[in-house]
View 1 (tube, rainbow, N blue to C red):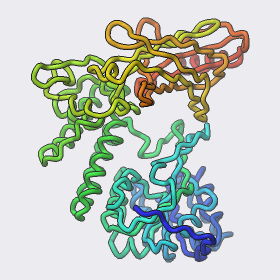
View 2 (view 1 turned 45 degrees about the horizontal axis):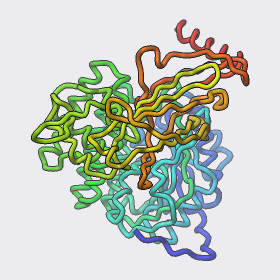
View 3 (view 1 turned 90 degrees about the vertical axis):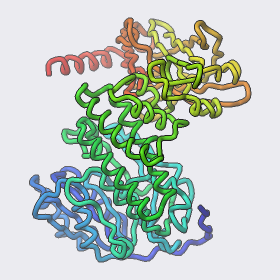
View 4 (view 1 turned 90 degrees about the horizontal axis):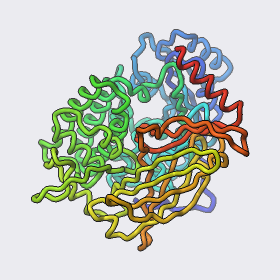
Length: 540
């Protein structure tokens, strides 16, 4: 990986070089905005190819109206709906006449300057692919989160992808610009028909062809996430087991593509990515599913993992994802789901029990001793899945946060008595409030505890996530979240008087990953809004 040479006055990117392929099906509400964002990129865009996947909601008429006044816009209507995203993108590749092509989904947008940034990078580096930063924008809040930001911190040129295996972490196809003849010469296409996670396979095919790649730190794509929409996107609709089996199929195919092309380092990185990202994400959500889904998920996951285990590429037990995989492989039936959820959290938390055997030392549990924890404990304390329990008790004046850090086989005591930085961060915009540092004192049984005052009125309305940083005497820091203690009324809603707001409603709760968070409503209007929302849910 080599930083690209900097020039004082970069040459302007050639004009009219890019085809933007916009795909959509029954998305009349959003497709116009997507097309306009592509046309607004300026003269670098030679053509916008809007591929309508046989819509029935008037999308084709809308696009035809836009094309009537814009010579750069071409509309291609497919006669039969494909059921996925791959086929319409392939249609766009076939229709493109420009030297470069990129993709845009009908419910997303290109930010200003995206095409210029990618085109300048790809031409100056004589590369076949340029890639930039995608941001996930949660709607309607507008909160943005960068996708795979560590890849896009500086202008960088890679002679071949194998020099930076971390590229496999970014499986998106839409934040990239491709030479059209590179795709055609190597026969790089998307899977046809209803194939979920088609971009996993497409991206693997691109990397397998070993292109020269230019990376830019610029924002080049806005992925707009509408979780409250009546119809979720294919990748966000994870409620059915078919979504997980589709993901397994795509991950397996991507791995095989890289391995068959001789890209062993990239294939290994794809394997690590599956364990650290895909497996952990779905494991965090198992508690939301019914027993039938859990059994099916467990069986499919065991079969997928066993394929690699049999080939001598078993999961690395020194990582949370690898340990999670070993537990799944060791048990024929779903087990320890609350504990696995905590292990799958980010950062990982390993809750008790902390079992040992005379022969093997630390193990997952007394009834699953074949899963050793020894590799996981070999790392520094900053990398350990330390577990902190938390309980928030709302009160009329100052609320109380109780914390308890569990000892982990002597590792915490070995590092020395810690302090903890406590901060609440707003879910909407990630702003921090209520920062304080307190000492953790020894408690019984093994562990450390602290009590921290919390001024909920000063936090204000919204959803607040608890963030902790454990600080050890040698300067080591471990950022983590806290496991929300449940039971005995700990997570019930509290209405308390407030000198600042008159009345305040506080709801401590556990997130999908088991972490403590709190929703706060202030004033009579805020409290009534919560009450009306609850009444509507009860009447449904």
